[in-house]
Image 1 (cartoon, helix red, strand yellow):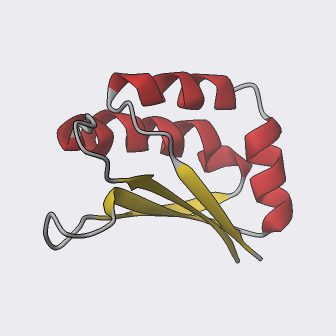
Image 2: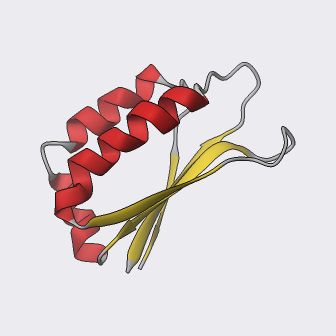
Image 3: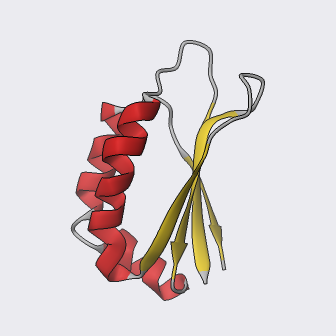
Length: 97
């Protein structure tokens, strides 16, 4: 199993729509990459405002090759374009083997 961990660092004045992220963006990710090796998505919410991220998600893939396939797919353009609909934060992406 391999993962992409996407976090949205807190920044003063930054916009992050948690409801949109949970109800629209993550389902889009699951629909776009589900057939390409994505096996699950777990959203991690901060315990309090002092945490360094507005949200994080662990995207679980069958293996590293599945991550490559998903990121190279045409569906990725829609996933990336949707980010502007819920935040103005530049996401940080951490990849595990």
